[in-house]
Image (tube, rainbow over all chains, first blue to last red; front, side):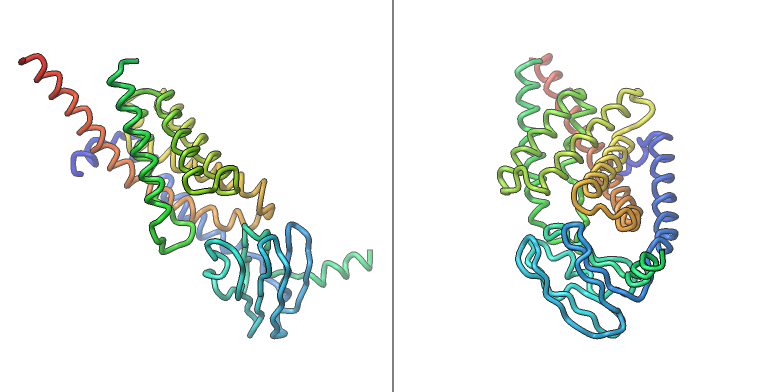
Length: 125
Length: 177
């Protein structure tokens, strides 16, 4: 192990340092990229299917590629309660207040954003 | 290509496939965390043999791996294939700069980063189509990729030393006999 570390070239070390620094910086800034808002937007296979207020507690069940999926909204947070997919990454993510939950196998994207405002803009235009 | 080389390539492909399969069974603390252990073999084959061999081992691993786990031509296969080919191609390019520029650790890092970038790109094009989601997850994936790539590079360095050492021993033994 010691030999392996010693034998790294300068380029190896520079690359490692650059990658660590840039990914940490990226993580710091990517928090700002998270969308914030008052609505839960549910997209299924790229189509916006539901726009629900985050303030209102409720549970909805949607039909997706791999059967039904249940999304729960409670106390201003949202989570994927149940989904028929292999690894349940979406369910493991738990409650979110901002950003999005993505369920790849089902093609479901839950985002927190401002859905109704967009609609209004369209009307006034 | 000598018969002995062919045997080594076959054995390396089998190792890569075994690591790939074993890794799929490992419980993972974070859903998107994968060690990319097969990359140890790709790096070693690139250093010991050449780019063609490394690409062949990668293709054998991705194709057979997906057939054995039942994901052939599915979404996981597309990501695995794209990532594997892009990672190995980038490593081949980095390796062609010369031995003095990147060692096994650097090659492994290059492979890990291009593997992840290709997968993120494919996931964006084919499945997610939400640039914010991809941008948000990218730095974390890159950080994990850097750490696992570094660890794999070190293991690969040790493996290369041992394999080359063994070769030298055999040659010496033959010479002595």
